[in-house]
Image 1 (tube, rainbow, N blue to C red):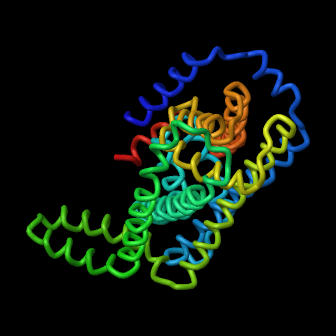
Image 2: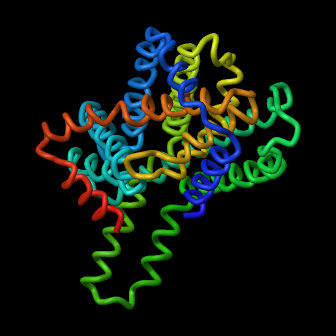
Image 3: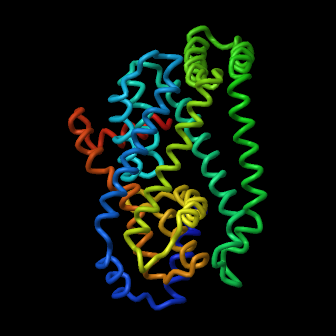
Length: 335
């Protein structure tokens, strides 16, 4: 709620401080290079394929040969659900993968936790790079970003350490923790105990991939590929604004470093944080006009979130699912 409130406050303050020139915003969209927009769809599609490949590594301890088609379908449907329903839609994908691959649902919830950890680690790496490069770009004096930059390095450092500790803990201590929890629950009735034992064991099975050095390296490689494709997509979108917005690829990495945290404030159906943070970074860090920055931010949201919705809807209908059933899946899986 605090993140959403910050999003609303910034949008209001910016619009109140500037007279928004709708004609300039529309004019920037009219002069887009449509070829670059089409090219940007390739890395976007690649991100979903890369996520499916990474999830296949998580599944290896439970299923030697998981179906990449099933994983890709669940990934596309899952991200469409996130766009439509917001964060509750996150649980659609692990639920569908568990059903399709016939593995325990808790194990795929654990895989989802692992995926979030590696994504957060990559986002923090991009953010750290952004902080090291920020002095070389056109930072305005008195920028609203100064307070973020002052605390950002410390927060990123602590968060990175926390994520690495969690990954290390899952790698080495998941099984001992499982035994410790179960031994402390022996006082429960047999039926309840076996139910909890099955749940905890399934969850631990979902993090088994972290025990293998080869799997860990592969997951890290797919994570780097994933975020490289995201940066490439943003760069292609920036090229469609050539002559209006001029950003180098290094600038794009800086931009992604800041914007990656904007997706935390995801409002169902309309996005939210990613657009506002994109506008903030473009206007305050790169000196882009508010109207043009707003047009670019909306385009990013469309190509990185909305574009998957039609494909997700088609695949969901093909599998006998509709938006109501997907919403129910999200609600039930999140309990």
